[in-house]
Length: 70
Image (cartoon, rainbow, N blue to C red):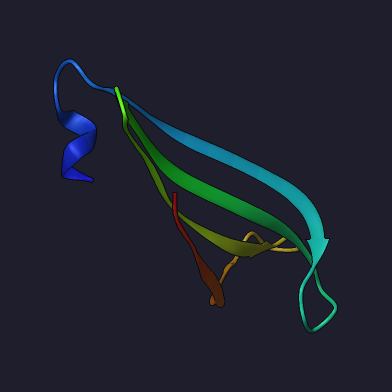
């Protein structure tokens, strides 16, 4: 995350969410959060995906997944 503050670089946060169903059948929002960086040929994105229960807005801690780098 320290790279996000580098002056002169193109950095951004990418987010999205979609309605879905958890493994236990609950209605959830499936959320993606990615830190993106681009500086010439130096391009990457690091992210996580997690679920938020729709009924009460609780983030489901066991739902976190690393979406990798790329």
